[in-house]
Image (cartoon, rainbow, N blue to C red; front, side, top):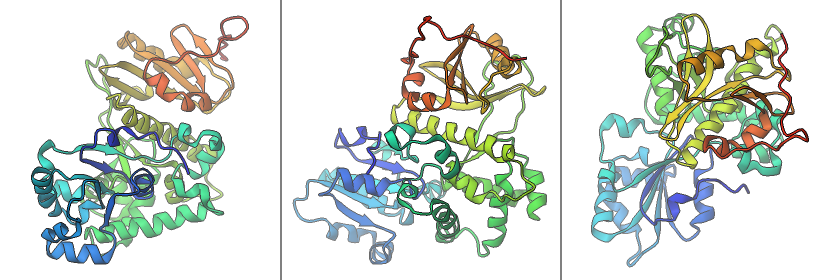
Length: 399
């Protein structure tokens, strides 16, 4: 069992929401840390049917004098329960953990979100640090970081089942559509935009649906926490920038399971987006778990200069470029150098496929595995690379 980095919500003994895609380990983590909690799983028919008909029935499920945690799994299935939870917090001082793999119904129906009486946290796929000695970069790029894949004899089959079963169930349970066929076609078409700018009109044409339908599908992926759209960084912009967001499925293994591949697909078409996806999911997880508060985005000019990830917040401004190659070329640093001209306070990094940290003036290049295993220190401004015998790793650019 993996030791998860998310621990601070339990220290205060205050109610909180815990959101995350199904399969990221929310319930497992809660059962590990709260073995004596009262669990109410709304995926089970006995709870779902009764509480849907009568949300007040939850009061009869709580033993008299109960002073421990109460966990309600998949709270979005019965949003009306939040009114009862709110009252129980106020009148009985009960403490709740409310998990969810979708915030769609909660946002759509404008239900009671406990008026600030419960904080919100997120559970992500496993990070490199959480995997400890089990972390293998090549395996991560093939199978992603969903916890269950580590115990599966055939992780690829598990991921395929996850996509076919979980996504189908989630969409149907939300009552979002009668025919799921066009949506699954959309999932595949959207996978070709992984790590790229979104062209909704083009995707709609390929799916043979109206543009508004395609946009609703993207919103659905956002709401179900299955994907994220990364905005362009445009604060105090000095150049003309693109306007479209970049698209990412939340886990590299899920992306690969959705993305059709055949003999005509070059490895670079999939491996490049896969590496960016891995870095993004690690950035999102560490940023949330450490509560750094960065806003994540990317930077791309109209002329095609692009920095893969920009992190902006009270802690500062970071720019990160992701490169698969073992060797860095002058062209690889051009976008970061131009970004640095526009934003002198920025700290710039390259996460690369080599084995040694390198230094190019004020740009630091860190080997990918080392970067992912030290990401909290990097984002927190505490990272210091191990010095070479000379005291400084050589900086060599290949033209």
